[in-house]
Image 1 (cartoon, helix red, strand yellow):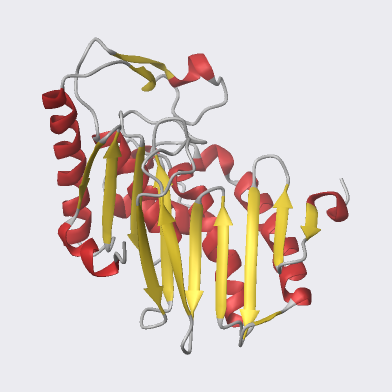
Image 2 (cartoon, helix red, strand yellow):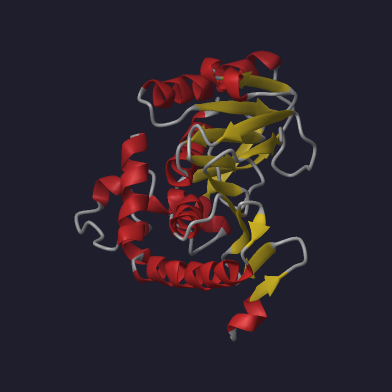
Length: 283
């Protein structure tokens, strides 16, 4: 397939990369001016980054506790390190793939002198800001719906940000019942792995929660026969509260370890958040 078939420039300064396993939206400006040539080159690099992941896919699809051949590729290594830092030994480095690729594209553009970069890899977002740049991000309480419940503001006081979302009905499987878990961190790789971990922790035993082995749905999944959530019926509010409590506990651990800035956790109409996320919320 030609690059022109998968890279599309659009009028408002976005570059879209659509190559099947990756749907990337790239925005980059320098002093509020779109840099078209830099966007095009970043799009091309994103494809090469995905190809590098593919080389290591067999290793990256193994639980981190089973990996003895540590990847020597910088992208694959970042995925491994992010998932290892989160501390869930049964997670595979693929839990950080979308955020990591977004980070590498964003870092390349930032190194090229851009003052504002937003790379959205299917909802896992890497943001880079310098000078007086800032941006806002809308938070969805349901990963399958466009409605926004909260808005956060990010500024160049911290030049690197990652905002990622995981939950039931997303691109990847989840072992929990959360409709959306959004984590904010200082890079998208850690945020991605953390969102997956927190979403998995948002669980409680109940016959209304239908789970089946992941490989029964997708034979190529990196989760093998681990049960993943297929559907969630009507749960007693106490059960939802317990699941949210487990997820919040995991999020607070990650916050306490300075891996993430914080998290917003949704399960249907119920919602909890880590305490220190409040200073980022503007609505």
